[in-house]
Image: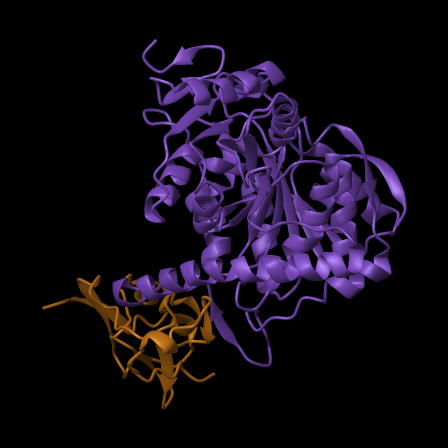
Length: 389
Length: 96
């Protein structure tokens, strides 16, 4: 497989090229723009045979993708931050209609104050939109998720749209070495999209209809059930991916040195790399520390997290998010999972990186230290302090 | 141009489709409660031009024996058919 020097955005665009979508409708927005630029170049130079639809907004971008998917073809879109919020109305149309669209989202802060840098408040505020949500750590995983996302979303039992999140700038704009698979290998991995969920002259259908109180609930239940089906399809996709491309992934979460760890940081996205590096350093000094990286926020790895943290003395959730008036959304989700599966350990929330503010290695080291000492505050803001300070 | 065929079925859990796609024109619940006025066709004036059929936003008008026929199970009483009718064959009457 040829190695290339690519940014996360470029790597993702390469992954999309290999997935061969029939329709791409997207509106450029920093820090996602490069994905749209590269894909439009690929369509222009003929290396990607897709209909590239220029739209006037993100609301139209996703609406267009929904229309394409309803015609039975593979559709892709990409956005970020305000763009994601602007298309929020359409997110539930895609998920409720069970259109397996793939969308790349560059995680970026939400206004106001206006800011183009990375945090995860945009996508985490839309956890309930019915989309599968994955968080990539680096360029290679971005490319690989671009391919796997279609495989998972389009599985007949799943049939659910898929949002792949890349940390704004730290992943989208950072250049790294990445393997770009051969087109023939990608074809072996990803079969063409076939569905009955389409407008068809031979068998006319009503699509996107209303359903009253009696039936609506059943549709929603089935939507939920389909998302849970994704758990085993993610495993299947990763197995097949490893066979064909030789790269393995670990499902909904990725554990690092957790087996005998007393203190574990749970996080998501690109900051996990620095957490692992810090864990290595502390391990060398005899500290039993570990890291769990959440790869999928939906379907949520509840049992997996509870199992991973079962023998820990404490866990800290490090996230670039705050649900105003409560705590970090990921912290709530992790606590709920631990409670549901009977893993009763002290947990702490560390919120940082909002609006792209740096989280340093020493910040992460302090989180491990604080867990060991015990903390009076559950909710902590890196660089500011505990909630009531 | 045949009108929609609507056969009232009972839908259990397994009958509900996985996605929002189903046999075209299939409505399972009567939806006429919004109506406070109803269109009434005067068969003597109706020339069967089918303008009302084309304009009806709910697709509840068909033509039988050359005359407009309205499906009151689904008509919302908007009155567009009455407005569009050139021979003034459709009158809006109060629902009682």
